[in-house]
Amino acid sequence: MSRVPPRAWVGLVLLVGLGLASWLAGRMFPEALSHTCPLGMDPSHPDQSVCELAFGGLWVSLVVGLTAGAVSTAVGLGVAMSARAAGGWLEHQILRGVDAFFALPDVLVVMVLQLAGQSLLDAGQAGGLGPFGLMVMSLALVGWAGPARMFRNRLATLEAQEFVAASRALGAGRGHLLRVHLWPALRPFVLAVFLSRLPTAILTESTISFFGIARMEPMSLGRYLGTSYAALIYEGGARVVLPAWVLLVLVVLGASLASQGLGAGTRRV
Image (tube, rainbow, N blue to C red; front, top):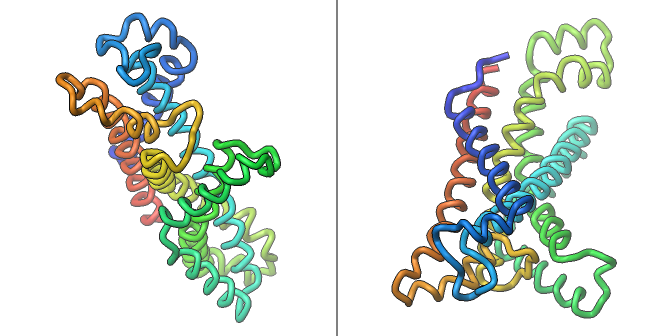
């Protein structure tokens, strides 16, 4: 196994640190945070402090990103493995469908899905799917195509390796090849692809929530920024908006560093 690059460790430590901070501050001890926050109360939400809303929003954004990224990665991996197992003409047709989904503009499609889903929620016909589930499913529906193409290409590269060809020549079946040879070599790449979906999912959700299309409750970072950005017109309003912006930038930076570092390590295999 190749050594994990330093930037991947930096990204992972940043992600884990932000996740623990948001869980402890935003979910476990919100009352303590509201009384000790040095930034004071939020003018738009006078019963909550800026720290409480920012760290609580970070937790929601992280959970949405992690869940949507996991679903997208799992679906993409399943499609890629099915395509490779089918081979030939059917694989080509599956990849054409993947490319068609990949060409769709993520933000616009998620906006349409959210508007349609919100209408169903208001009519009580969403089948028990709340705002969180609706957002995760919307992000997964537009996010699986990229991982599917990456996994398919990675599987094709691994299957061309000499040790796989030798095992196949000795009579190994596809199930044995996948379990013994392909999956162990593919696992670090799966983690890298999963982490690469995290910033995309968080930024997409934040953009849609910022404009008020998604009604995430509790508020995510995007919705908190969308409801509080008007504070910038007042003196000292930056104390309300900047913490959430900084947390959003840090979580995206951490996920990007981790995915790029792990991806660079897997390409050496």
